[in-house]
Image (cartoon, rainbow, N blue to C red; front, side, top):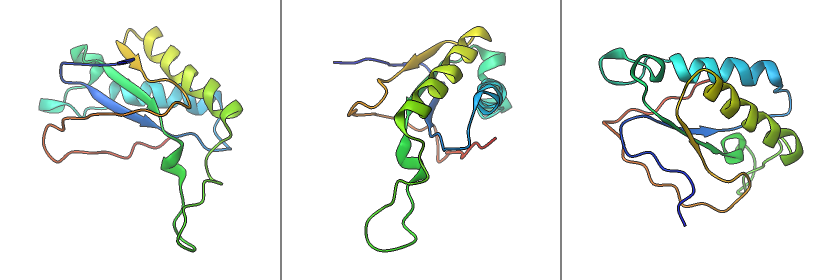
Length: 124
């Protein structure tokens, strides 16, 4: 079953949340994602109306510094992370962005077609 999907060029956002993130970071992240000039011809989702697919991704805070198993201690607990992911999505929509989402905490199969070798780590 497909939950969220974008078919035209836009941004696939794998969104990780850590313990110290709050509403201020969620607001900054939404603004940055909407306005970042990462699309063709240095355009943004704000200037082109391109959609965003936002998928929560706690594994972005996985650490492999010690041992052979990743540690997830840098990732926020679900009760902290889910409202912040929802806040980013809500703020994007308030800004007029077209946003699709995954399901928080669900096992998902995410497909992506990259337009060139272009992946960014966006931090606030």
